[in-house]
Image 1 (tube, rainbow, N blue to C red):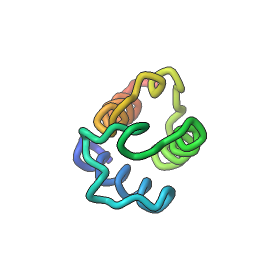
Image 2: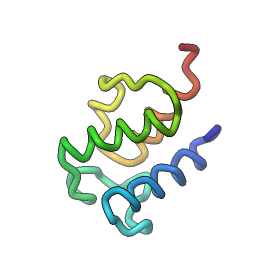
Image 3: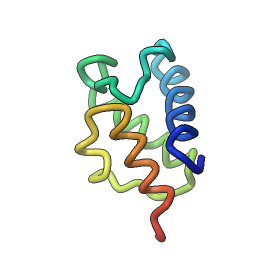
Image 4: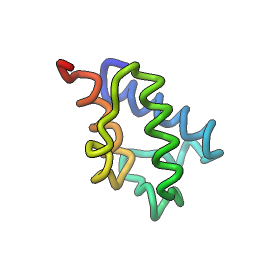
Length: 84
């Protein structure tokens, strides 16, 4: 997962598998809570899986302000490309 398109594809696959969502609904503009019916437990589950996928430590603060799939993609992109 080097670029945002690859990250979006991985998130789409992950969310389809974990939450049985329609892949067509998982767009950068999709709102996590309003459009995809996410709750806080779903968010924690997804963060755990993202950590497993990337092998990087996840800072929950990076995801606290995420409201859309695009926000999640951006947070994962920063996480992957951070020097730590």
